[in-house]
Length: 274
Ligand code: UTP
Image 1 (spheres, rainbow, N blue to C red):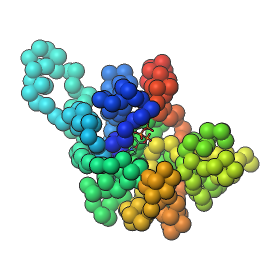
Image 2: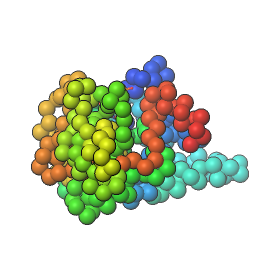
Image 3: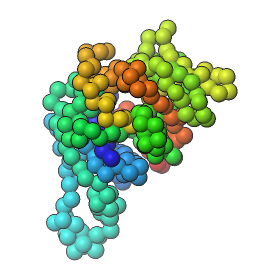
Image 4: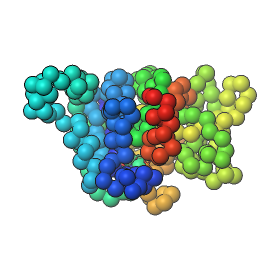
């Protein structure tokens, strides 16, 4: 299975630091955050990783390119083990790189990434500046696709005041932690935030949590999506038309989402010793 990791964004929340270093290379322990995201994808059965890059983000492709000369140098110094973890990951997946020339939004970045994905292939999307601690939702999402042919997104409940910052879905809980989606809106206005009707009678605003699995047909929906909020191609707009055509699922995130792409998220990740 293919996974697209869009990593072309400017990372303005980390400026000025991110002017020269990609935020996806921020360290969590001794590894960059994107290493953990690639590992999560590989653990879910992904064999091909498409990383969407832009000018100045070459450190990412450098990190994932094997370097036998450097390995030989480390070995000669008795330090070969230091690269074992990364080299084992490199042996598990193939990497493909695609450039996004203009930052026209997440939907556009995924369209760029799709140029490296076979037309009839379903694919996953993982935001490479966000780690999930605990259980990854990816295996359940891949299973949903295999069993029903339907796409799905990981979600987590958020209070109304934060819901306006995320993609939010509405619908109903069909089994514990599994939702049938009937509506989705990117960064909804406060008076139109969708809700999920939970089995226990509560209503929750469920925010998209950085992990998606799509059928191949999302490609056509993205191609037909006009620029939306902020004049960007919004992934959520394409997902909404896919939902209308084929239906869509959401899964409750069991673990915790840590968005390393902002300074508070990084501090949280470091202080929790992830
Ligand atoms: P974000 O909105 O979190 O990233 O997009 P950003 O735009 O880089 O960050 P800020 O808001 O300015 O601080 C989520 C992911 O989508 C990628 C980003 O690199 C990030 O990993 N992205 C976003 C693209 O690849 N291209 C885009 O045009 C926009």
